[in-house]
Length: 393
Image (cartoon, rainbow, N blue to C red; front, side, top):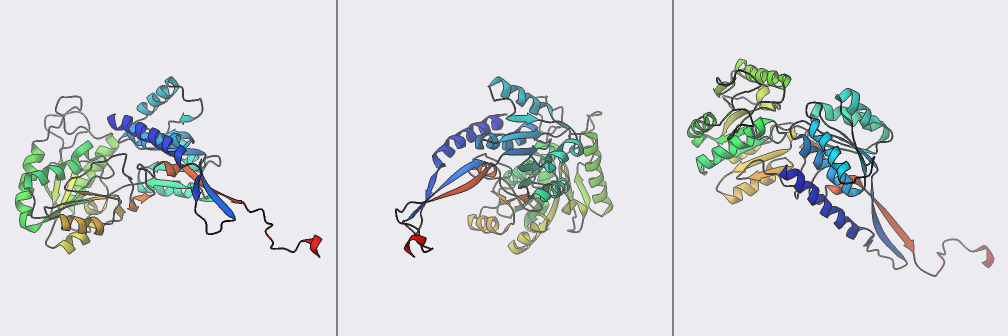
């Protein structure tokens, strides 16, 4: 909720900064012309958001859209719509004019699909799965409608042998198990240097077993349930498939013994991975970390980039130059050094490859919802002189 408030405040500042950018001059090579740029709202925008951070993901889109002067139709996930409906009440309370922000709840085929293909919607911004992202692009294509897509991920975290092991273990587990692994940028593929792999894995198991799994409203909870029965069954299937393909469940993979009800899964660490396994290639969206060893920096980079996704990546090492090299070599939109998952609305967010395109947040976040118009004026008193005047014939 702090991030929600902070995001609205940030884009309020961006709205004021937009006034200063308006009508900015463009330097031209001819003194007979002058030019300036107008930044105008793109129009009506369709915003389709996921369930994992229901109000924050909506705010990432609603705040810059309103700051740009657009009107918006927000379609939240059917699994978590209530906070977005609360946002509508707050908007009424603060005097947002009727019709500026409109919230439509419902299933994807009934609400999201018509919004994507509607001729009066000028742009669509979507956060969610790769498969749904493809459908939104297809729906927008007949009208050549611009889209911004923030899709899935299978992000790597690369840990070298020069680290403080307990510090690196905590960041590794946080990067995958925070929010129960239900985060598109989860660094769910651990690449660990062979020299420290055995000790690192042992420490990870000890730390993982110490994570409090409980009702999220309980004091000290660090891992709650996953969102739905469907997601719960999907995660369990990923784990059983990994076992049948020959991987080893180092810890977790089952319901916690003390929780008979609810969609709880113990934090799960899987080793003996090959790069052809489903668990290596597909996004789980649950508290499941897969582990693979490497021996050289080049091998680590190759394995890190061995994915169709490119949302995020992390590197943990005491060698700053090495961290810089990996930051440049990992093909992803967000790179974390000696940490995982920090996200600030002041910095752009988005991915490469199947993780989508376009960037939200940051100074460019408002530009997603603006159309740039150049206005060029002829300012000379002299005629243009391209055609001969009839009066001089």
